[in-house]
Picture 1 (cartoon, rainbow, N blue to C red):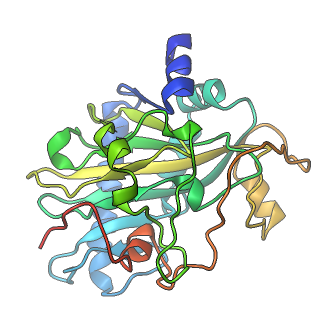
Picture 2: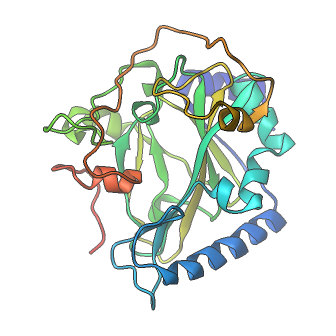
Length: 289
């Protein structure tokens, strides 16, 4: 699926987009599953273990901004990340031993889909080495108008910015005044539905409100080298190993000299990144009314 030039581009820039990895039939199946899940959200007015709801969500007009851990919610989401074409790309970018760290489905409905403020994934889950990346599966055609993910090239080789608030607690975002130059250099991850972006765990990124009349659903997987161990610990070793995508269990973590800031003390508003970032006093992106 990718060439040696693509691998070099990822190593240099920390981000690549691979066109149309998923076929139309798979996309149709995924959209059908998503429609059922959104309809099911009408049964709750609060965030749950599955649903993270948009402000303004009602039973009569369900608005979901995230499906949490979709690989645990429906088999099709677990299947996608384990497909040979995806594993081939991951092996070329990370190596033969791979572990799924987590997944989420960020949903930006037309005209109001919530933005995600500028951050580095590394701030949320630092490991013993940084051979980690996130896959962004475009489930809809994505252009500049419907809130694409924006990634700043080469930031994966630089500093880890402060993601804490004035109160000293983890806030899940960076003060935008500190990264104005980096924001100006960001590139949009756009393309046809079925395309996939791959961005390094330390790459700076964010996304704006969906201002178009079209949805923008982005299925995200976080994948780590199997010898990268989370610095916040492993609670269940068997569950940890159940997320292996390839390779054997590893009990000798690979340690590398990478900058780290732990997400502690924890955010006062626990939950998804939307909840964590909502406590910030300063934001970059404009939110829908």
